[in-house]
Image (cartoon, rainbow, N blue to C red; front, side):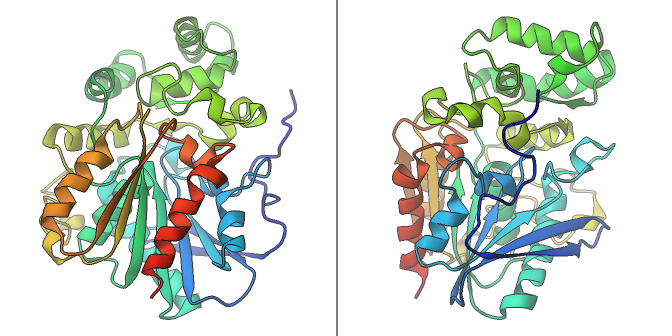
Length: 364
């Protein structure tokens, strides 16, 4: 069936000059920044997606998206990053052993260097989601991103916490799928695989358990991330067309990142995955160790129905309020989950104004 909305379209932002800015990381990956510019602005906003998603989260054409909202709210120079977790690149499904340390050490510093090459020393405000938020905070607290004016983190920051069923999946899922079943990546479109293949059977089995809707991709994403029916959002918060095309926004990925997340969940905070990895000797073993030197204002967002990272940002707010000298704010979003604060049909009314107000407080 043909998609009602083209994949990887830029049609969601029609009233700005759009330009793409490819750049490379020190470990040899090509990444991309997309600029949406309406006019000169002293306060630049950089948007960072999460795992299996991409910059498409912020430019969805079926509704008033975050980029358009920010442009209308006076932030007339908005950038969106596609880093190695982006489903616009093949990296998520290639054979790799990337960790969040790779993203913190390579991707975010390279993105900021490329951004600064175009905007100079203007103020940069970051709005990040999911593991994009976690990895960006790791890079910031490691001291690799000087000059950030403010950071908004949705769902999780530096103290990832997950439901009990998710802990089981994080601990046992990667070895079981990789070594027992020979499945090295998970894809929300598994049910479309050839009949009777392992992928097809897994997709069908997951849908047998998830009876809450008729969108198979939604079922698989709930299995991949979080615990719930559905896990990633509240159904009522999405437009029907968004729900139907959810696999366009959150696609396939390998299982190796899960190992790092599992280690952080066990530790209770962000930690380096492999202390013996000499490539990341400039990264701390404990990313909270440098919190006493971070003065960047931080806004932590979380839905009160978050079934992916539960109360992670509530705990993070409590921890950072004690450790860091800079201001740290918390906003709990009634009726929202993990992803719908970004892609919800009413996010421009319930969520985006809170982000805009926070950025404006830091735009001084």
